[in-house]
Length: 80
Ligand SMILES: [Zn+2]
Ligand SMILES: [Zn+2]
Image (cartoon, rainbow, N blue to C red; front, side):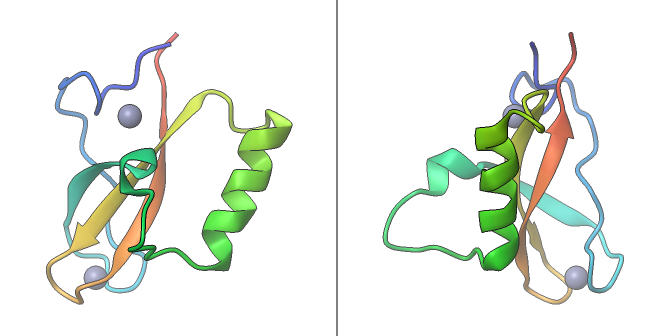
């Protein structure tokens, strides 16, 4: 499986859930593990999906919206 974002294929990240603006991709969410945890309950839901295998074909990335300064996660579909 290949994640287009991880492999630099230039796939566009998602737009901001809150304002619809362009977001900046900040890397894999797994790289963000540490004292700074921007995630809320949504991330826990995703982690549950990941552990159950439902989202096995997705790569979880962190994105940042310059417009409203939100940090959120997007699931990027991996290529087979
Ligand atoms: Zn990725
Ligand atoms: Zn926004």
